[in-house]
Length: 94
Image 1 (tube, rainbow, N blue to C red):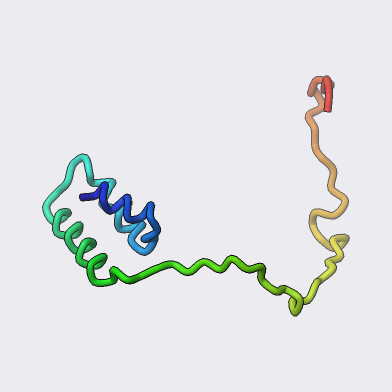
Image 2 (image 1 turned 120 degrees about the horizontal axis):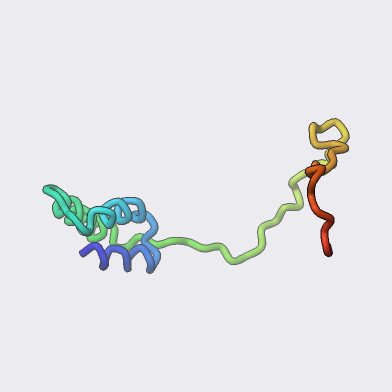
């Protein structure tokens, strides 16, 4: 039953992903109540069987977003240098 729910997640039912991964961690040694939880997940899928994911394929319009040019000379990373150990061997290439 868990394997079928994992296929549902693979096919696009991302809304049950966290519940399925939690239940699959108990797949080797199930305890009392785990079967009832899995049945509840199947009931949820039956109840919301017409759910779908929408995917926008068009390129978004960012023309109204202002472009900021930052001055990094006032940053803590301005004018930094790489620290190399004093006893490091000379590199043999790039």
